[in-house]
Length: 146
Image (cartoon, rainbow, N blue to C red; front, side):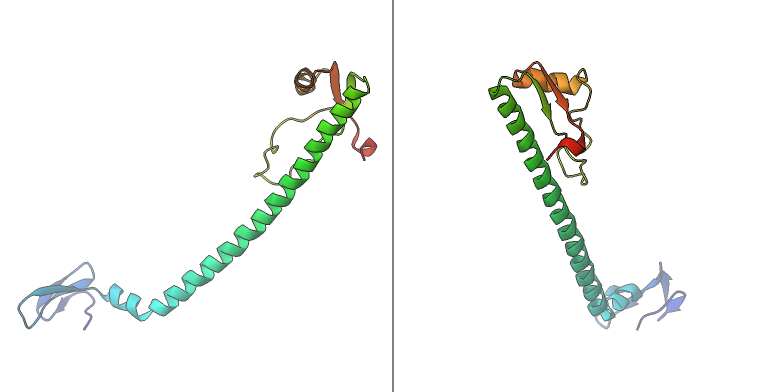
């Protein structure tokens, strides 16, 4: 029997449960919350399973979105490098390349990082020009890119 507060079988209640004396003379603590948990165990398991399924679906959707965005960025960066090498091979030392599309996912490595801009003297453009061994690199307007 579960006693709630007060006295139960002549022994004072402690914090909602009750100390009881068994026929063997030993004491045990009757906690009503534990019994309620046992009765509702199937409900808890069902709620846990539903939570895991919903969390898995959410994580899968986020993962697919991240993979798509990272793949798009990889393709664009590869195209930038290809444009630089083509123009450099033709002897063009003032290279023009397409800027990257804005990142849509925080998992993308280019999220919150600089990219080429239209200004010839921007620090990132100067850094890229130095890295690829050309005089300058500038970004083209998005409409001019294929």
